[in-house]
Image (cartoon, rainbow, N blue to C red; front, side, top):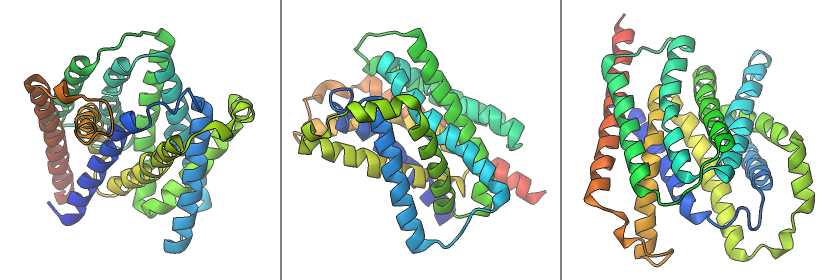
Length: 311
């Protein structure tokens, strides 16, 4: 495996580590201090500003006019729909349901990539995706203790998973023509416009009292903007330069595992409540199933890629 491929895998692992830690670090921000709409508006606006600053310093590249429409569409599915439906879905439904529904994403991506990008689908790739899904569902069900069901919330979460899957497939061709930083900067610019044009966002922004937000919460907000938004999206598109959309999406299975790992780690260093009993032999077994699923998906995709390259 080449160094670029290894870096791509590490980038995707870090993305899901960011998301896993986010479940604990960002707890308490919503809805106490910020509504989902305001939090999303702050995330995408600040991240877009960071993307433009870094791009102006490192990359002097522009998106061709013929590709602007595709960037705009990616902004809808990868930023606006993805963020809005996930936060509103999670607000109505439970984290257990969210964890289960998100496992549909790699399956959706594999199907969409097959029809749109003509990515090959082997028996081992299907087995890997299903194995990862089974491990993630079992781990989520074992870890969850809270109740709460909402048909509308689950529908929002499903739309979020489908939307992000469409984004991963559509953005892939852009990654073949431009640098990751250029692509994500333009995509986020369009996505930010859509979020700010969403009518409830303006209403919630005008009703938010930013003066009552304590310093600790501002640090959590900064983590979400820098790590969970800016770096996570940048790392994802960077990985798409070297890996298939199916492999990239399969890393989502790591999220339930990372939530448990960070809950245990933060408890050990006194950063959060004591979750010493969170790691059990049963959960470790499910984590190993997830690892196997991601490995099988990745290795089978690599074999298919080499096979097509020889033709």
